[in-house]
Amino acid sequence: MPDTRKHRGPHPDDAHLFGEEQILILQAALGDYLWLLDRGYAPNSSLKLVGDRFSLVKRQRLALMRCGCTGIQARKRQARCIGSEQIRGRPICLDGYNVLITMEAFLSGGLLFRAVDGCFRDLASQHGSYRKVEETIPALESIGRTLERLEPASVTWLFDKPVSNSGRLKQLVERIAAENEWFWQVHLTDRCDHDLAQSHDILVTSDSAVLDQCRIWFNLIETILAMSDHTACIIDLSGLQT
Image (cartoon, rainbow, N blue to C red; front, side):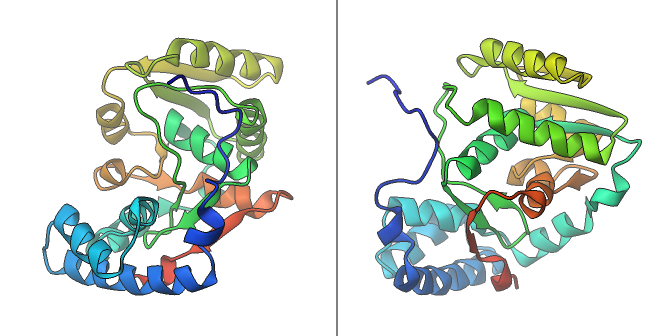
């Protein structure tokens, strides 16, 4: 079935799945999930054990997975995160799909979760294909205006080449940049995670695997949320860090 979505907003069941009562259950489940991770249990088996115990559905388990990591991972990631005042005059590299889709979810009213490592993550899914939505251009413009204020030396976007429509998205990002006189470089790569992890630029991503390997990163989404007049639907689970 073709993807006909015009927005990347909330799932119809989110109001129930992440309502006040369910959040209390999710917090308890996340506490158990983190306990298992910190003791070396495998993430997949830990997620199944905890999900089954608390009768979580697939979407709630996805939130748990995207918010959880070991205490050591969280502390190491946060130690490599720099503040917005350190961006000026330094090159920055964005994990294209990761950043853009989170911004699209934010602008369309989708849920954002503040994870135990401080990152903001959404529940949007991408299965080998990207579809432009109504929030795509506003998301790019919001990212661009924020970066303009931060004044990095250069801005590079990396997009996964194997993802369908990456070429079209590259052209769109380049067009938005040209219209606003933002001197962005936009590249397609077959090894996006590898290239990000090996980069010497300041990275913008919430990808856990990349964050565990990178030298330095910046929580751009946090800065955008703090500066935005747009109301965000945020569920903060960062306080459960061990």
